[in-house]
Amino acid sequence: MWSVTRAAAVVTVLTAVSTLLGFARDVVIAAVFGAGAALDAYFVAQGLMNVVLGLVAGAMAKAAVPVTAREARDEDGRCRPHRSFDVALSVTLIVLGLGSLVMWIAVTPVLAALAPGFEGEQAELARQLTRVVLAATVLIAGTNLLAGLVQAHGRFGWSGFQGVPFNLVMIGSAAIFGPQYGVIALAWGFVAGSATRLLLQLIPVHQLGIRLRPSLRLDDPGFREIARLVPALLVGSAVGNVNTLVDRAVGSTLAEGTISALGYAWRLVSLGETLLVASLLTALYPALGAYATDRARMRKLVDQGLAVTAVCLTPLCVILVCAAEPLVTTVFGHGGFSDDDAALAAKAMVFYAPALLALGWRELVVRASYAVGDTTRPVAVAVVAMVVNVVGDLTLGLRYGITGLAASTTLSLLLAAAANTWLLRHRHDGVSLRPATFLLLRSMALAVIAAGAGLAVRVLLTPHAVIESACVAVTVCAVYGAGLLVTKAPEGRLLLDTVKRLRGRVRQAA
Image (cartoon, rainbow, N blue to C red; front, side, top):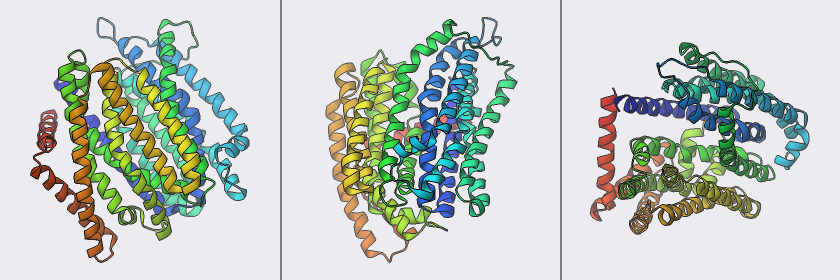
């Protein structure tokens, strides 16, 4: 158990470092390129690469992990040949290589469908960028598969660290070469960064003495098992990609910079979920699987997790709404990022903000469903939510622009969180609906009060982005925390207990 705890702590720290570096990367990109037509073209090109990558590589990497882990060592503890993995790696690289080549050739009609609003120089730039970033498809696929192979042997640090050199390369590409060569430097930086990630995974493979050999033995039993797992995972990978592609397709028909502004706003929103929820609930997720057969214990764990999620993310949602423009200006408002760019991104962030709570809530209930062996229903919900997002993009997005696109994403995530919670309760008795309902009602009531206090502070302050952001954040958190104490809400005490336990685990691991 000590080694598992230590591995969890190491992965959590490395993931946090990588996430913060990724955030710094976006700040540098905003300073160099702002939120204009060129960066819109880059995001569309990257989205096309993700279609090729996400639909095959992600699903294959996830499917290969359990088979590889089971076959990692023989009875004497020695590393065995990974014949099934060799086949999976060979097939994936061949399929993705051919897919990338097809996309490279057919880039013009494909981009016409994915970015119908691009014309002239912007369309030509998008074609150039797409052909560059497609080179990274095979590199990223190989990285993901090798990371899973290494994890099957109990090595987790290397996969957690791989984002660090990638983000450093991207930051260097944007800061050093971006001003001279434009956004094309960002595309080549993406390829170079992907190559560093792959090279990094080769180090533990060599240390473990694993010998990889090309193989196309499609009748291998282990590979057949991997192939059977791929379809369900394929759907899950496709859902997020389709949403992003439709968002950007509609965004390409709106004002220049819409796609980039959506990306900056979402980066700020998702940062809280990535850092807070992933860190605070690290100790909870493994326990869900351990108590999957004891529904009373599991239900208690889920209820506690939802309480921690609500008390952490609700005040953050309020801060994102009340201080949207000063926050965007504080973080991204440097260099080429103009006041108009900040105003556009802030509009999106206001409508994205409720999605922060929905993200954390949904992640917890979906993992609980996975813990009891239910993978089909969360995927079905994800497909329905995708349809809601697409319909919203084509209606609200076209009617209201960037705010409609952001609202469509939020509505789809709220639906997914609610539907997955309902299914977990009625299919598996894995969550208590009555306490969860009162939890949300308390959170919304306190959020309204805290929002009023935050907006009042903004009115009283002299306009200054950093001061406004800090004062609104302190005020909202103070009012929300005081509300928890006054109402004697159980989630307030639970949060303190969770933080203490997590701190103790980190100290023990150190």
